[in-house]
Image (cartoon, rainbow, N blue to C red; front, side):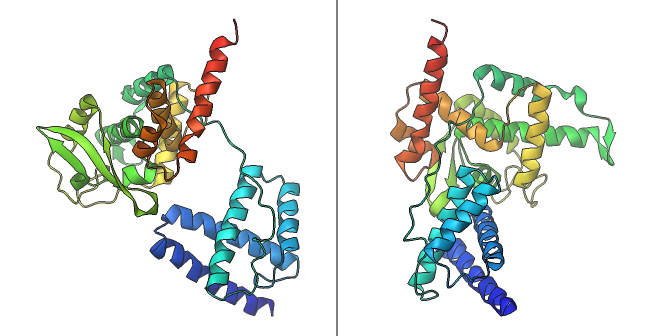
Length: 310
């Protein structure tokens, strides 16, 4: 019985993930997260000797208690329940279940986090560390120093782009030459397809636009901007995060900085220049202004630090 239930759940999960990817246009990363959360739920149901299609609200509440006891953070728990809410809403609409166990419970609220960003001094330290090539060896794993230097310069351009445009890492890596609008040898803006398959155009500062334009010389319109060579794929997000961590350590920055934190940095710089939230929302591609409002909390924290010693 357990094996047949497992097979049925595997099939239903596959259908659901197909709905997310091809109907809702969710990214591969988001779909992977949903798949992982559903696996955790199904494994717990098996331990609890029940099934996904007969689960009740009390099972969901017990699942939350189990996660909390296992020291899973409140933000992660809220994300898992959000996943289940989407899953069961879809399942009920498609007559896969007769009852939605999530609909009846009080959903935990995601704790609001103050975003992490780089101060201007830290941005300068990161740039200095990135462009100091003393740590690049003459040869590593058969790769020449010249090849390693080109990789460093490509990552330098990538991290600067995120800080100058606020692109998500998936948007930056998916950028093709044809998505960059050039005027008189300057990259004026980039066109990206964000969450929900929504397109937006993000303007670039002129000084960076000149640098980006130079890097595109000799590349075709369908080439990825950050690919190692024409026709190749760009690096994966995991590799990008690992490389950034090395540079952050090299710069002596005592923060956990990811490419997404560089996106936060861009938003914070805009806020410091008194850019309106509705404009920041448009630049970042947020569907809701409520998502953008997290940066007002960042501003409030900065003000608290300014007056701390008065």
